[in-house]
Structure formats: C-alpha cells, structure tokens
Image 1 (cartoon, rainbow, N blue to C red):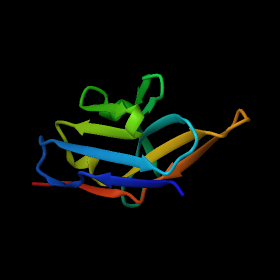
Image 2 (image 1 turned 90 degrees about the vertical axis):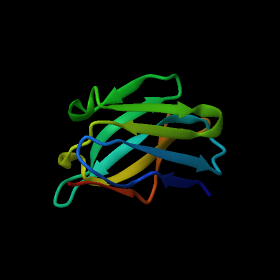
Image 3 (image 1 turned 30 degrees about the horizontal axis):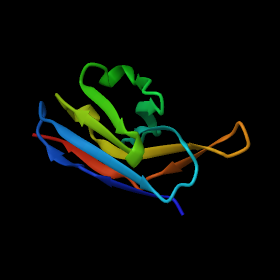
Image 4 (image 1 turned 180 degrees about the vertical axis):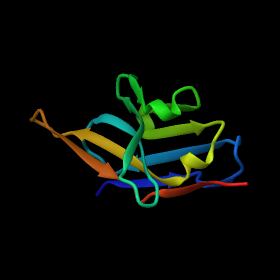
Length: 121
C-alpha cells in the first residue's frame, strides 16, 4: 500500500515563502516522476511542478522563477520551495507520485490528500 505524507503547508503573507515536502512509502515499483498539483476553490486541479527520476523538471508558467522543485530519489521524497507567494497561489496542494508498472510500459499515479496553502495579508 503506497502512502504519501505531505507537510509544510500553512498561512503566509504575500511575498513570503513556504516549503512543501512529500514522502512516498510502500512502493515496490520504480519512481517515474513526482510533483505537485494544486486546486483553488472553484477551479480545476492544475500542474504546479514535476520532476522525473532523471531530474528533468517542468513548471507551470505562473510559478516559474518563484518555485523550485527538487527530489531525493532514494527516499522517494519531493520538495517544493515556494518564494514570493501571492494570493493567486492560495490553493490545496496535492503531491503526485507516479511509478512504472513492472513488465509494462505503463505508469500509475498516486495522490496525496493535499495540504492547504493560504497567502493573505
């Protein structure tokens, strides 16, 4: 049973910083990618940033230059450093853990339960 444990959310003033962490445990499959998505009230879930097992990163345009994703592959842990936060970053942030299904070319994605990030003065 794969479990994702997220931490680091909270409330911060505009211009502030937060660091999210997500640790995946229980997987017997190799990690394909990890990352973060977010969902604001009344909006669809959207990609924030992802990082592959090889270290390739992908960011939403809205967070480029402000957020940095990194990972500790042996620990199946992903981090998201968020700087210069603004009110539009307010959302529930979900950790994503994608694994390679053995003996196939398929992947399977696990999701965390989400952590709230609120940016407000």
